[in-house]
Image 1 (cartoon, rainbow, N blue to C red):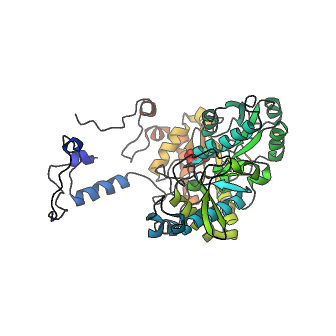
Image 2 (spheres, rainbow, N blue to C red):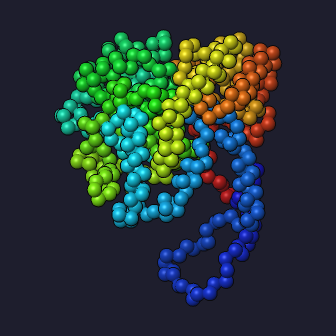
Image 3 (cartoon, protein in one colour):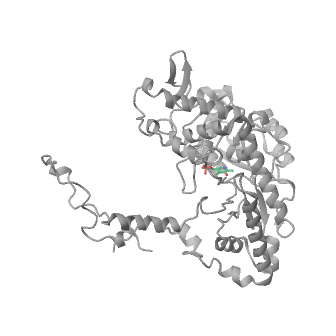
Length: 478
Ligand SMILES: *Cc1c(COP(=O)(O)O)cnc(C)c1O
């Protein structure tokens, strides 16, 4: 398909401005460009067609099923979009007087309170822009805690299970810690003996997601957090999988000291295109004075901003991605106390329903009841037929399904990680299972068609390695 620059014709689409009826202003010539900017010139209708064509080549939750494990690609109700687009929110300036932005401050304050309630935390910052950014912020809380106690010199290590999301070790390193990986046990949980052997005087903390990236809830969670606390470390909860437990179990009750939540996964912000999102960080009271600044408080004069006593400073400009917070606020209020646990119950039900329909054929990596997602191991199918997780994923594109997360978690080599989410109907799940089972049959009977899939996408099998190592991000005008 042609790019805008290739569609551009000199002089096209420039007649939308009225005749100038005010005196022309002479700019200082030193401030002027030498040449006009190289912008595409195109008529409105061609521009519209260009973007419509582009939109037709992407797959979003409005196109079809999107079981991208660990990403919680659920449907985000339109009402939350509409509320976040209200002029009163979009027209705000972050520097306007606080007394004129009381509604916005109230939204931040009350959303924090509600997510603190859901996660079992005492306080929260809305500044971080994503989950990984929240991890970094949470680790700075842990860092400041040890620093104030004079223990930072010796507490240099963060323990991370081998099933963790890649952002966990990356954030730990960015926050100045060394990473110690602990293996999973045969049930997919943390190996307690290995954990006990890994902790010590040098333990700053643990990062863990529960349910983990295998979609399994770790039944030893209280013992795990106790082992860390007994060693003098703190426990960080990666809340990216909160969609599985919200309203049922709280990280704060599992023994965690701080947590991030991905508003764009769990609380209704579309995120297929990569952002903006938000990764608010909650903490127990003993960490709240280190939170980023400013924080919102409420007293008899209304809502106002303040600087926490020993704040780490800012992790992002102003108040973070505020409109994402508005969506979360609207989402939580519409679901309410009954709807929040019902949503996660349905997410878990849908995942188990699919897993049980597929497990007669496909191999389930850890074959037990799952939470909101499950991991299939294509390894056995591959040894038998030569069909890999990649081939299955590519064939799903022909079926109008966004492929599941692949080759993650790393401990399952041919992993396909499926997260249907709560917003899919039984009919959609049945149809998707039918496609999956057909592909399984094709693998056995006609593997060739899988090697060449997808057959009806503009781009079929790009060279992933080349794209990652040598990305071409810029249009070359030569
Ligand atoms: C998505 C995810 C993250 C990172 O969140 P981002 O918002 O993408 O930065 C961390 N951990 C897990 C388990 C995740 O699924």
